[in-house]
Structure formats: structure tokens, C-alpha cells
Length: 75
Image 1 (cartoon, rainbow, N blue to C red):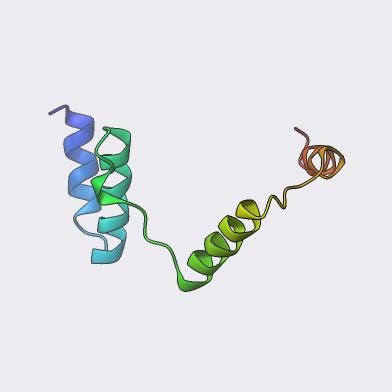
Image 2: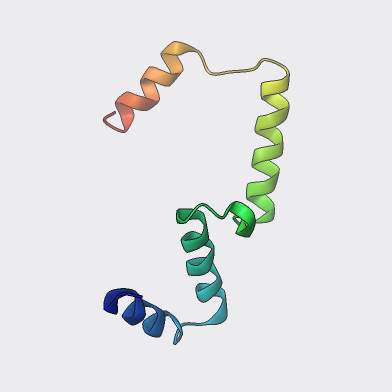
């Protein structure tokens, strides 16, 4: 283990358990272990379900709508 990673672990170990778990999930994802997953709130879960339902019905943004969003965020 590098000194920097060891320092990061020591620093993270002083954080509250929820933050430690978030850091652990990110690390596992970055290293290719997708088993840790990402925790979503109930609102996020509902939004994903709504999006999947809309996609299943073929309800997608038009090219113009996508361009508007890209323009809004400077993309």
C-alpha cells in the first residue's frame, strides 16, 4: 500500500460510518468490484422507475430538447 493510500484510509477511518461506506463503495467501483453498488434514496429510485417506464413506452427527449440541455450546461 502506498503512503498516500494509507493516509487516506487513516483519514477516512475517523469519519462517520455512513461516509466511510460511501468512500468504500466508490473505491470498490473504481477497482471494478461492482458488488458494492450505489445506494439510492427513495426519490431517486422512483425517478429511475419513472424513467424506465417512459423508455419502455418509447418516450424519449427530442434532438432539440437534448441540444437545449447541452447548450444550457455549455456542452
